[in-house]
Image (cartoon, rainbow, N blue to C red; front, side, top):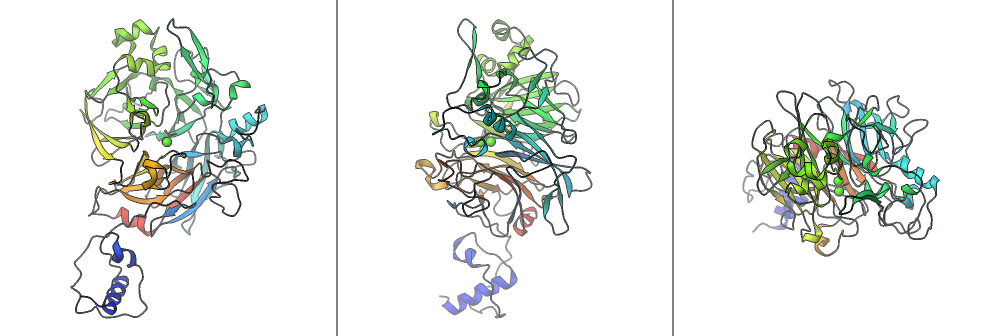
Amino acid sequence: MQNKQNRRQFLRFLGRTGLVIGAGGILGNLVACGGEETPKPSPTIPKPKPSTSLIEGIQHSSQDELVLAKGLNQQVLISWNDPISEKDQFGFNNDYLAFVPLDKNDPTDGLLWVNHEYVHPLFVSDYNEATNDNKTKEQVEKEMYSLGGSIVRIQKNKQGQWKVIENDPYNRRITAQTPIPFNWDSPIAGATEGIGTFANCSGGITPWGTILTCEENYDYYYGERVYDQEGKSSIAVREDGYGWEKFYNRPPEHYGWVVEVDVKTGEAQKHIALGRCAHECATMFETPDGRLVVYTGDDSNDEHLYKFVGDKPRDLKSGTLYVANTEKGEWISLNYDDQAILQEKFKDQTEVLVRVREAAKLLGATPLNRPEDIEIDPLTGHVLIALTNNKPKGDLLGEILKIEEGSEDKTSTSFKASTFLAGGEATGFACPDNMAFDNKGNLWFTSDISGSSVGKEAYAPFGNNGLFLVPSFGSQKGEVIQIASAPMDAELTGPFFSPDSKELFLSVQHPGELSKSKEELTSHWPNGGETLPKPSVVVISGETLDKIQNLS
Ligand code: FEO
Ligand code: CA
Ligand code: CA
């Protein structure tokens, strides 16, 4: 049996050589503690075998910090309310991120697009839902300004740090007051443009470098149009909504779309052909003949997964929208001309797209457990869909669904669906949400356990929300490794890699969301002390990220 002295020497030897053995356990944890002397290896210790480099994950955490795995560091890039120009500030609750280099040969200079998803009135408009009576128009307008998106120029300096270039001419805001045209030949609720975008959750990027930002829970702002049995409609306003309809009369049909933004000009358009629902994301694939295939999930209990297939190269107007029947492995056409049942119920294709949830159900679409983010595995071509959970159906922990399309160009109308990874204590995660692949082809994903559930009952084993890695190479291939844990009440969202995968841009959304008042804050992240919590974008880098890029 190894005595204490020999054991210490062995650990020092490992530290000196940098060799890492074993996942977790005492050796795994102590391996970094290198000694100052240079002892000889004990003759009682067997010669270490060549070993693949292991990525050490973290334990679940309930700290008010962004906790990272060893060998990673963080830098706050920008926070809510930071000035980006003389007239504009960074918005609230940052979610999807995309970095678009200004010159594709220079990965260190470009534009960062940031979604701003929803407001917390206590912080944004100083309106406490529990104690205040009537929200004022001025308060509503503060909320309207804080949503939509931000475009900021960022550059990496010689010390390897990313900085926002304040007052850069590219810096601008898109808000809930920005007019945005519809990419469609017929008017939508009587208009050819809508005012503003909000509820911008996740998104996607196009091969030509524009971004797609998705309007998810739009019904909290101006309500939703509902229909009775006779087909008469009215607007239903949510009791837990933000009350914007009291001051602005805007049709709900103008929201719930996928919005394309040119980050260089700020020009935007809403793509009607992709349908109207609580879009989580829009993930684009270009076929060899230049047509576009776009996957998008409708993130509500029992809603559906959609796929648009374009008719012409790089065109998002003419084409077919399909909805998935995952049991039969069929993409069902939502084309008015193809479906007699749609012709009975709706007057034209425009109405089908505006009321796409109803159309999908008439055609036998499969109800899913909150389809959130979608990514295409660059190594296998499989389409991965995060199904976060469906509490009324008893699915508390969610899964990642895998779709294998019937054709390589992804235009096929048949596919095979299976579970890729299930949430649970065995895998160490619950409620998967945003996903990203790094340059190497490793999968990263974040979790979205709702604020009120974190740490409770079925969610107790998982701690705060996190960021996870599933390596595609090495001895840990296919394992789920937790890489980061979010501050109190927060969710990590929008993971996006720099062009060389040297850095990961990540949103820390809604820290301190459960605070009852500014005097009873549940988080002070990122500035600590008694400061207000601030949603922020962080940059993660370090030797562990480099190591992950070199797994083989
Ligand atoms: Fe906004 Fe579905 O997360
Ligand atoms: Ca999300
Ligand atoms: Ca979510």
